[in-house]
Image (tube, rainbow, N blue to C red; front, top):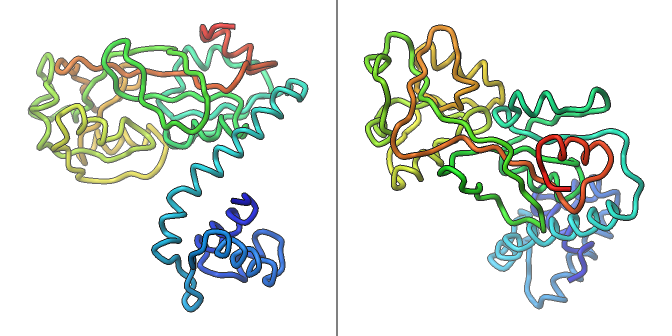
Length: 287
């Protein structure tokens, strides 16, 4: 399939409009219609209904393939350009809020750094396509186990740090004075669902056999201070790495079972150069 036609199709399906897709892509509406017709002819199946504009069953199936295919093409282009181009003077680092540890901050170059705080699942794609030179991702893992990251392109990961995890409780919570807590005993508690600021409830659920941990409140931001303020006010529990759990008005109780750590990994494509290589080396990545 011609990737230009595929990109046009994905855009039309996303916007549900031929005219809006033409505006976004910089084509005429006639050209967009010709792209869709050519793709439908190539595949031998109608992909879109016209009124309203919506994917057909065959079109829905194509959309499932299109995202990974186009991402892989973008990653391949970025990889070749990265090898051929001169090293950039600056550095764009994509990170989650809790992956930016004190060690990582201390290792940042003195100037020329752009930090992009993103959801975990977006960071590998940002690195693969060259939008970010390096990525820092984090999550729950058994000690020394690597994180499970989406397979978007040939990427290298390097473990940067592992920390104990703690359950953040309001100071007046009945469990606040326990020496330790078992994750299974908290499955029916009130939890904060903050996938982009703390450790996602899906990871806690997976560690507990796939059940429990229903959210009492969802927070869609990336600010850890907002998350901990909500926890201190009693809106729900959250799990944080040890270094982020010293919060006024709360008690951080160690998680004793199962054996889990907060793991941070550096993600990069190819061989980092320039400022990216300097930071990667400072964080212990092999040259």
